[in-house]
Amino acid sequence: MPQSNLKVKQYSPQIPLKLIKPTQDKAFYSHDELMAFDVAATPWRETLARSFKTDKQLAQVFDNINPVDDAVYQVIAARITPYIAQLMDKQDPACPIRLQYVPEQDEMDVAPHEMGDQLAEDDMMPEGTSIVHRYPNRVLFLVHNICGAYCRHCTRKRMVSDPLNVISMERIRRSVEYLRQHTEVQDVLLSGGDPLLLTDDKLDQILSMIREARPDLKILRIGSRLPTQLPTRITPELCKVLVKNRVTLLNTQVNHPKEITPLFIERMSLLRCSGIMLGNQSVLIKGVNDSVETMRELVMELVSNGIRPYYVYSMDPAPGNSKFQVSYDRMLEIYHGIRGWVSGPAIPTFIVDGIGGLGKMPVQPEYVSKQMIDGQPRLMATNFEGRSADVSFLLADN
Image (cartoon, rainbow, N blue to C red; front, side):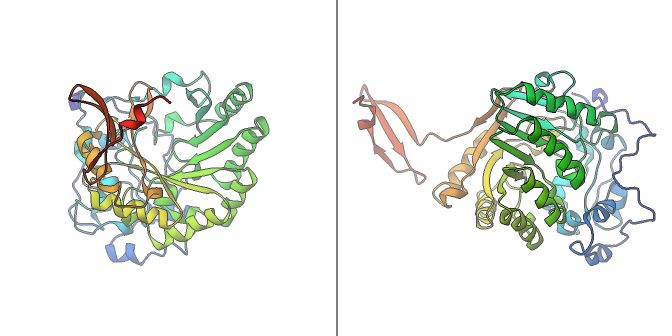
């Protein structure tokens, strides 16, 4: 799709895209000033208020920041928390953290196969709700459309950061009523935007509504990248809210070992000590984690800190994402490069999220396959080193 045909959001100047309105200038004017900022000692909402929001702000602190047109921010806004900014290389545009967050002009280049709602979530959303009911017994429940920081590879660019697409409490109430009526649903995943960007009180309200309507739910999950983008959001108070409402699992998104910092480990341990299971869903991103060495280190670091590497996704074809795309063949190479070389619990499932609402489908090399050898069906098993064994005895129906 040519750039001129790219549809962008029409923002209303009367609706500010801010969670906190700064009372004074809180910008950073040098790299030294940024690095001196104590994230751990600052309340998370105050840290969020000091986020970078434009390429011009970034250029005051970092070298080699390319200017972008304002139209880029109409497709998806920019926000980079000071914590994330401290992880970025000052000079290198190829820094794996910079690649995920710094806006670039080529985001406006949309490939023919890319689309706004590539996973057909809107088509599977019952009218008046913010529920996506794709699978028989589990649903996605969108509770927010704002994020702590905006990933340039976001799959929901059509809705996140859009002040005209705010999810109201009335819509959330209708969604809870949908859960009350559909007792076949046994697994609810809160997502957005980022649910943890809600205050403790608001999150408690929504979780309590769900538990009141469906006390029989087997699984209540939260998907949030905020622990990676601003670990100080994880507080003892938040943990109490999650425990009170029997939240089963929290999945975050760590894409590179640089994101596993001492502060991240410390705050995620609060969740672990509260009895919350922890998982991670990475996205394969060109230049960030598309190497065997990086993925081996990432999954082992996650497991060693009590976080299960759950999924590794191929890049969703949202508008402008083709620059990040990792090929199918490369996905298989990375899978081969970690199986047999890292501990079993550290091996995630590699996933293609099917366009048009097909759901998650695993990408697996064929370690065991049926073959015709000398005119006879044989079952051959091949390990990670390429060595094979004939296990045709498994073909027998005893």
